[in-house]
Amino acid sequence: MLSADLEKHSKYKSHYGENEVYWGLGIEEESYLQFSKLINVAAPIVRSAHKPERYSVNYFSSYKPDTVKNLHQIFTDISGFYPLPFLFNAHSFTRMDIHGKHKTTYEKVPKANPAFLGRTFFQELQNFSPKIFIKDFNESFVFDGDTIEFITQDFYKANAKSVIQELLQTKKKILNSINESCKKNKFFQQYGGKFIFPPINPGFAVFHSNPTNIAIFNNGTYHINITLPSLLGSKDMNGRPTLLDPEHFKYQHKMCIRMFQWIEPFLIAMYGTPDPFPKGSKGSQRGAMSRFIGIGTYDTDSMPEGKIVGLPIKDIRGSSEFFWWYKEYHKNSIYNPLTQIGMDINYRKHHLHGIELRIFDWFPEERLFPLIEILVYVAEASLVKKDISEPVMSKLWNDLLVRVLQEGESCELKAEEIVMYEYLLDIPLLRQKSKISVLYKSIFKALQRKYRNGYLAKCFLHGNSFTKFLKSLYYLEVSDKPQTIMV
View 1: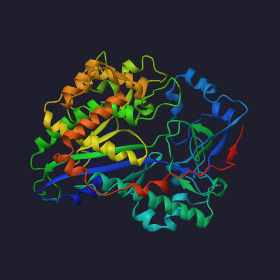
View 2 (view 1 turned 60 degrees about the vertical axis):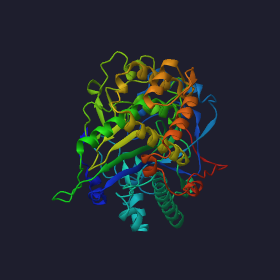
View 3 (view 1 turned 90 degrees about the vertical axis):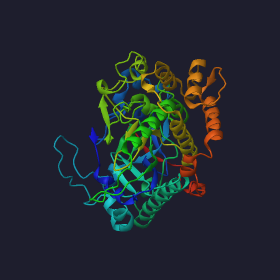
View 4 (view 1 turned 90 degrees about the horizontal axis):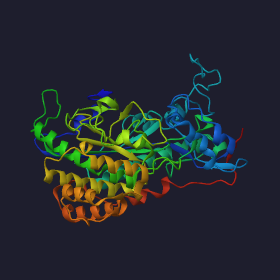
């Protein structure tokens, strides 16, 4: 599915100048809210109540049947209760009222639900604070599928610290306003009346929109948007920004994308969220499945532009190779492989946008700066290296990725793989068998020494402290008497 220039991105056109060097940096974070009190769930429900939410994908169907049958190995006490996160998604905002009643009935041809109050929770919030929930909506935050997506706006010539600070400020402002509304109007008192952002990616959870079933694939996500420094020309007659040298822009970003794809196994190992099932991926549950994202799936040979959500496997570059990672990994995985998978990268989603890197699960925001830092150093290495090959066409890269998905950060690199990265990044590394987590730190330090005063570092890595915004977002109140659901 391809969209060359989404309407929601038209607002960015006015940010660009003329006849100057510009670069871009932005973060999109997809998240849920979580009630501050956990919910106690009876063991039989955890083991057997797996019907999907009416608006969403049946994620349990991602697994082979024997996997789900083995839930008793995780939840061993058949007579017990398990405290799980109680999550609140976009559908609870836009399709339900404050009493948990849906706008429509749940049947083949939905009808208006007579029990529905007449206003969704989001409409209540819009009445409470129009400035935030009307004016800022579709700007700094949107609803995307079942998630709440926060989008930094100040991308033009931005630096990492200012962008992260903007993200945190936006999240805090919206969360505080939601909680103020709940407190004033006594909403959701039975669940504690207060929201937080999930402090982890929970393997198992309960959603407010589907409260009698257990949910999986509950991860938040990040998309990191990076546009390399580029020369702008004059705006065209319609006021659209232009590039002085479009072919050079394309080539630089092609090389950068390839370099990002080469290090994706490291990023998956260090930042991915494992599957909660013991035999699932220890690197990244979402990466292994690749429903809405992918790993190395963007085609740098043809460089398609726009937002690409997914493609049939037969159209994925490298998928016909006998060593392609997706086929090799799923020969012995616990998942039902898909016939269409997602992209790791989007290029030129709008106007003069460069790269959107889509592979990341959510992780605490204090880890964002080091991530962006290594991406900047790797990008600078791509400007120096030139003519970088496609990782997806490399058997070594595919084999490494399979092991990373299987073993996570405990995966060990072979000597020939270390030599490959030593040559690619042009840095000295110890050529001995090493865990990927250890090697990642060595690569980070070597790149930092080489490029910390480089041109891209000066563009992207200067700024002020942002850590003071973190604590209030992730405080979890664990109640002595969580809300309980039973068979």
